[in-house]
Image 1 (spheres, one colour):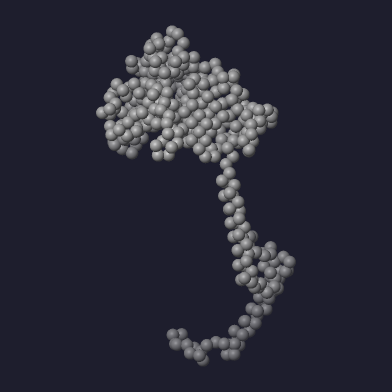
Image 2 (cartoon, rainbow, N blue to C red):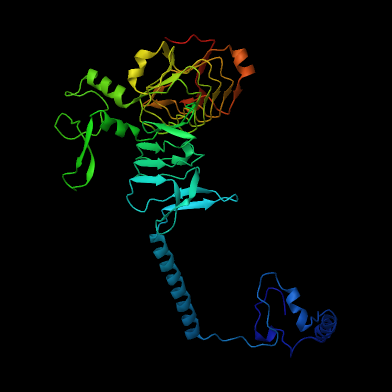
Length: 438
């Protein structure tokens, strides 16, 4: 055989025509290979496999699976899965209205309420079993955080005399809630026209989100009656637009309702005066409420976390002083003030986290020099851009000097709002040593 020459059959090396020296080398290699063969015992061969793989079957023939048997197994699995799904779906149709829990000391509290349909009024005073039977030997002593959560049907909640603990969190996102009534015999809490306070009136605990609907009815802007289409009893607005169609509430002047009427409506429906005895505004107290004007007494020391969270309709915060106690919570109380001034009260010491977040209706904020703590994101999103224009809170006015403020005030992360300019985020300006606007 020569290099470069096309190989034909007679040039191919086979066992029969292998040269003697190659045959001798092949036999020698075969002898050497036998010496290096690994002899693995059958009972140890699994230890030589990759972890997680099925154990090899030594000396067994490959099993032949019956296709029909496999199909039967798959069908059985599917039937079981469908049965479980149906069972869970049927269970889901049953909604446990009250979920009460018992503490180690034997007392009971409301863990959660689930509206089974369109329940409008709820009373929490005693343990209720699954059949709806009350057990007056088991009084309810607490409404847990988020006991009422994201309900859009309940309009009134009555709280029993034995409840010792509740907060704004207990009624979180109850969008239709107009009124919370506290049993007069309760030694811990009370209500003032549907707004919750501690019994000593030192803390305002919770202002219902839809309280303005109740005030529309109370002040003659609406009446109860039957819906002409459904026949159901509902609140029917006396307000109509310029075409004579029912208008639930008033958001501005129209040909029918001038500025004077609009101001009167806002004073009666969207104004709240916090009584002079109050020293604390509770956490989540005014979250999501529909209010335009809030009057805070000089003497309030703390506004809790999320105290006015996402109350975007608030236009003004005002503070007031007094000679005689103020108990009237309506706009009529204003004429009894000794004096009033814009923004937060002198003597305020703490502003909680997310306290005024998303309150896009305000355009002035004054932080008195008495404030010693401001939580994180306290004024977040009170300044924003709309159609390329900066709106909301343009700057923060601080009574203390910059040195005193940074030295004496505990500041949470990003307490100041930010605005965007050319894709860069800036904190709004702070005017230190500012004089309060009159």
